[in-house]
Image (tube, rainbow, N blue to C red):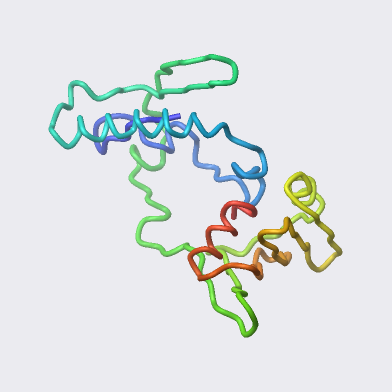
Length: 185
């Protein structure tokens, strides 16, 4: 999907998705659910074209709808998205996350190639649900305190509050990338 969000000139992301943000880790990631690689290139090209239109000031040429593509089912749609009268962001100017830092951080641990990644928000991980998503990608085992994952390339231990110890990575950025890709908090 791709959608232009132009401040003060159309719907915002909250108009499209609503203001209820799903619980951290409650949705599959691209790694756990799968994504066809070629669609990322198609959507990126469309997004770049829209960005060029914006940069050069061709505002009349900007797409005013949600572009949706499903390459598996051969569907290409342009869906209208309207500003919601009750939108807390663009209509009520309630910017709940503006100016806050919610990002995760990674800390190098003693030992070989291990980093602890701490998400921006505390979570309550359902290990059984996470196990169902991750077992397709590698070996998992869990108990009431943690879930262990290993696919031969990376391994991690995930704790119930969302923290994880990522092993087999070179640096903090790679640890955060593995965290985002597999855990998705």
